[in-house]
Amino acid sequence: RKEVEQDPGPFNVPEGATVAFNCTYSNSASQSFFWYRQDCRKEPKLLMSVYSSGNEDGRFTAQLNRASQYISLLIRDSKLSDSATYLCVVTLFSGNTPLVFGKGTRLSVIA
Amino acid sequence: DTGVSQNPRHKITKRGQNVTFRCDPISEHNRLYWYRQTLGQGPEFLTYFQNEAQLEKSRLLSDRFSAERPKGSFSTLEIQRTEQGDSAMYLCASSSSTGGTSGRGWTGELFFGEGSRLTVL
Image (cartoon, rainbow over all chains, first blue to last red; front, side, top):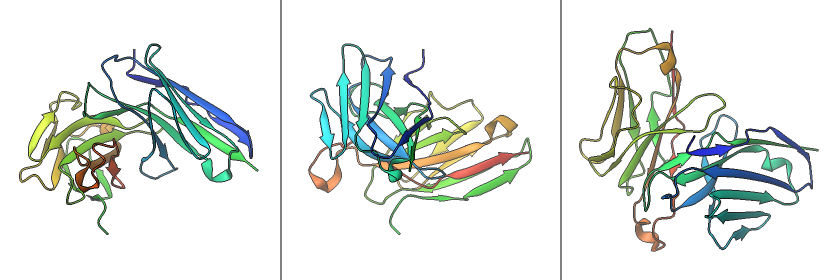
């Protein structure tokens, strides 16, 4: 089983739509969780951290379900500029350790 | 520019040759990471350093791959006897293990360079 699994998409949605991405992780020892964004031909950049209590940053909401080892990202009121690949990321081991990335979910927001 | 710097940006080589990539991290970052990314995949973790110590190297793809960070600043990734399957983007990232001077603790934020693209003919 891969360490982080995501639906690769692509998700093609109209502007203004709400879209949700999910991922699962295999290592129950992983303690920290993130979503990164990668634009075409660019390097990945941190979008937001994911906490068990859920967290929101503007139009973006991330949630973690430790029991199911499941992470989600919800984007409301999609903008053209949201078009990118969204990478689900977890720590390799417990604590402050290297990050492993999923293969990413590609989002295209269409006018 | 004070971001992560990688060079060369592009390298074309023939199968069997050795190649070396260099990464200069953000100066105040004590951690440095190497990842490999192929088309349609997320970054694949290879190895990382905290200062000059290589803390995890079991993910290096084969014994043809090696990395060094001799003085705890820049790092090199060497691939010996390259194969066509080594063609990929090699990404370097740096971070602070403690959150640096921000006082926020470890944020999980890796700062990536623009990568070194390797093509093996």
